[in-house]
Length: 585
Image (cartoon, rainbow, N blue to C red; front, side):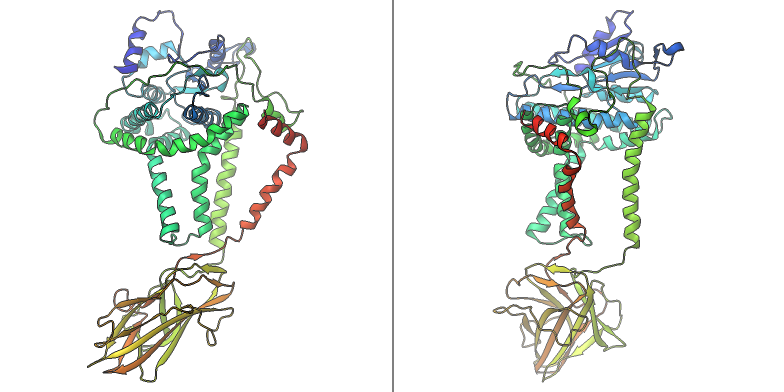
């Protein structure tokens, strides 16, 4: 029965008079006043004359698993310590503030004995997550407080940590599959709790998808120099780095909130490395939990028993309150639990409303951005590939080039001439952009031609600042390179379609705002019957096109990022001095 089975046996011999049960792991060292700090969260002042009254909906109270006993043992323990700070000081307080589903985390929690006798302990690999889902399915809630923090020991080796996280990932995902519909259709679970549960459903699988997406973007941009259509380089790189640094920033925020010593900040970098190193292990274990009928075996996580750091109660966020709100702010939290149970921020409607206001403001801002994007004028950029178009009936007059493939059933055509024929297409009114350095390719379709046909095709491209390409000077191909080939029975290409690329990489090509990209094709007939170049036809039959390297469109709002440098100026000199003093501590 693993850990859950052992706890089930303990439940059988528990004193029948027991009202509350506190669970600590063997490697935890709770403070002497831990029970006094847990107990008030089961009550509020809703009774007569403000007397304490039990909050019947609260089944358990989870506190901060404060992994600090051996945090200085190695870089790994420092990283684990930083990970927990981000989760327990940022993520979980936010969940409690908005009323989202909160998990019983296996240790450092108190639960009502009468409810525990009803639901019992299961034998899952993650008996704590299983217990959480049982409670919520029956209409009970879990409260969270960081103020009953419990010092605990960090896993000291990577192999043990990987095995522990694999057990968590498999058990978590297995229970999600088992309890998904009971939670999602339960009338006792609120919409925000269901939303949180839906997010948690793929909690461990998300890491693998995140790494896969990030690596794919990195390869496409650095190796293949290709961007997702409609995405600029700045936007793509911004998304990549925001994903990479999201967890480190949360961990850093957690350390700041608990006013950790400055030396603990070095664990943030280790946590970043650790988050990537654990991805394949967690992803594989989560996949097993999703598809297997039964969970795998349970492995105990050995600890070294070494204590490297002295611990005291959290310092009640004194520095952070003074830095953000100044010396006149009201007391946010008592330094010690008062004799009678207080009204807690975790259940107060004002705090919960504040959380909803913050979340609502963010959602509103995103909605306004989406609405604004629908009203913005459409600006086009030279993408891949660019199709040649004509106007009028076939054989047509050459006109434009853009990203839209032709739809003509009877394609436009240009017949080769002995003296040569030069045709130019233009894409006008482009936003400022840069076509990166690289190889250009021209793909073409032909028809006609008899006998010993030989025709020379020469392609060039360039930029003008206005809308007319009549007098443009080709800049592609660059000096020393060519962009030409031959077609026909005596040519280098005897069948249609075929492609020709520049003989070497071309320099970057900058297009000014309002400028035009010009593409020019010269056909010279030598021998045999005269063939014709087809374009503006259906894809696969006559969609002649040019493929430039990838395009970079500058972000018009990027310069405003410099305003972020002015933020410290409005925080006040005293706040900056407080922060500097804390960092150098």
